[in-house]
Length: 487
Image (cartoon, rainbow, N blue to C red; front, top):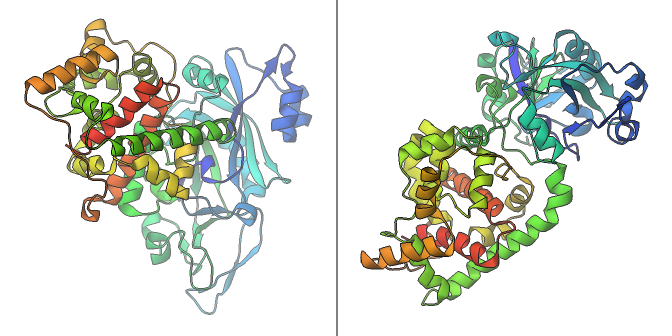
């Protein structure tokens, strides 16, 4: 048996994987259901609501015949069919008859064995469900699995509030697979440790015959739909992926529910993409303005507030530990309201905790990536798309619970308000500091996949922070990236 984790957003469904079902006094809003989940229209009359629960429509998996494999190299067949391998391991066995796939197993196993959990603390870990499967259905028209789930309002309160405000939350599916097949050589595996070389080292690679290598799952036994939301887990996943290449669903199961580097849902693609593109262009133009003033000018002078000796970014470990106890998006929201920006070191110490030690040596390289990063994103279509759609570091409302002394320390070290900036400039000059020069073309030897990944993640945070800020604050936000990158 091979445990696997499947992220709905690792398929391209062209719409959010999860949506809060609008309710009326009589039950689910029929207009909403017909737009979003018409598949369940016949079940509305018998839709039983439990007191203290809210309801969510979820897309779980896409059939390989239409969507191909997901971003983790797992493909789920629609129904029983013959699969011919481009390069069979056994020349005498060039094809295999696959089992019934999603049509056979999706609804039956979700409804008989499935429940809703948090972060995959499921039956394998003696976890208790925080919700239940109302109905599972395979959508023939769209070739995908879908669910209606009920979740406990008390346990899911923050997530439900985010969904109501059209902010993203993330889900993943857990399944036990009795076996899988290599799509390229037809090797059959009952354990991940038995994987052939193709699935171990070449997942998602395109063979000379034009075949994309994947793990075929024709007998998926679904038992868990989990909410997974922490940006820290997303970072950890991204670092693991950078270090080892494509992570399969079996690898993800071993990582126990880390959040993938995913394109955030339709809220950002349909509503935020134009404004995010405009913001990206704005930040890139500020970079050009900074470069043009490299020999002197207002932005050059103000960078003394971020230079060595200014005290910028000097945050005690105890305060970082306090901030780690706050939900990241709420903390981002509180700090943004006070115009407090997290310097790159503090940002990653906050999100990674003890895991920061694994990337501490990369920080110098990360900082060299920051000057000019928004301009480079504009020139890189793939990276630009991820930047525009990813809302992992978007601020949320709520109290972060920090006391006035904590806030005062953060204002002194990292605020972009006029007075704290002036104080840091004076401090820098008094200590003999000076604004840095610029070196736009960094040595390629300093750039690594890890530093590039971390720099792009920090740029996403900076964009979320700068969005909607006054022009002078946006200037300072970008200026601090250039300064720390050129110390």
